[in-house]
Length: 208
Image 1 (spheres, one colour):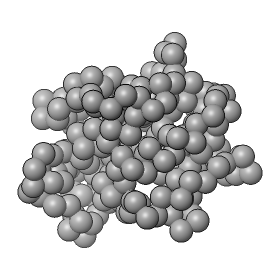
Image 2 (image 1 turned 90 degrees about the vertical axis):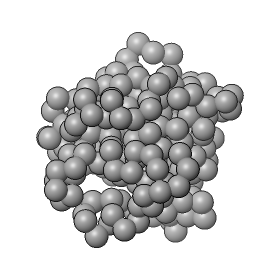
Image 3 (image 1 turned 180 degrees about the horizontal axis):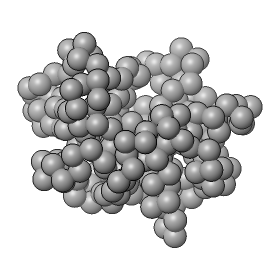
């Protein structure tokens, strides 16, 4: 699953956190929820390619074997997180560690359960990359959200504090003055698929 578009930022990877077990969804892995005829993980990975990421790493956890079997993720680096039940922080740590030794100097972090965010928003944040010290976040009506772009200079700091379901939140709070916000509210909606009530936002049919 690679995009025909030339990479906009050849030094930035996409990192898709897709390990969640969907506890409030009856234990259905979020990665395999379907939207417009395809699993959420497949759609989100494709969006990262289409935005111009040089490579895409996908962190899997709950139902990892099913995800590998059911989703078209060719071209992606699949990262297993056996500690996925500990929360998003463990997946973020696993994903950042998987980038060690690669050529990329920045990473665009996205969440599998936000299908309202697509390649347009990803590309806007990706375009704000300026180097290893970059710290960029999408904003929605001025409020920080996903995706978040972390230059390589920030990875060790994020790994040191990412615990539970906080992800990079604590690190970003401490470095709030360094974050460049990129408004994406006109091209994306930052809702999450967390509960049964949220499933109504998913369109089950449609073209892949």
